[in-house]
Length: 176
Image 1 (cartoon, rainbow, N blue to C red):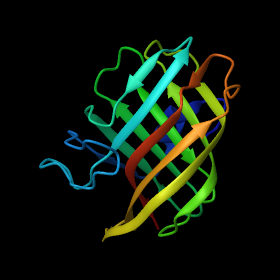
Image 2: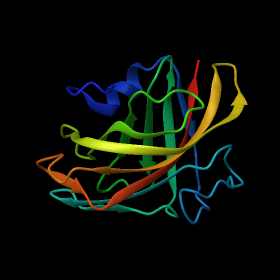
Image 3: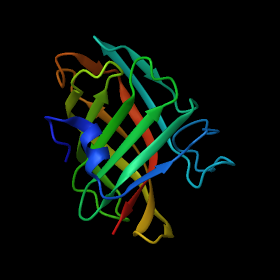
Image 4: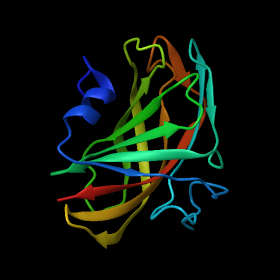
């Protein structure tokens, strides 16, 4: 769960282990599971925001991703757009997801980090469907899984900005 007072940046700073996968995306969609030549796992984000923050990230856009080391249910995925003029990161928190299990209707929230250092924007009232949660490899810190899914947020999820339509994501997470 992301601390609402300090956002994804605190999650990044205090996580005992942070895994970053650079993804020069060659994917045509988040469902494309072919890794690019410079990454172990493909990550992508397809997201459109409107309101005070207007933003569009397409699955084919270059994006890096990170995840925290998970000790229990849940996963925090952080997407780091190449162009940081609007957002420096998009955090996706998935509640109650367990390693290797697909699920529908998972509680989710988005955390938007702004380049000007302002307080993060939280988009609550989201749900995610996890279509893939596949074991990739055993690593020193734990087991890496590939996550792929879609989500949506209620229109009134944030008084600042809203998610237009659905969003799609692909990334990896490591569970102890």
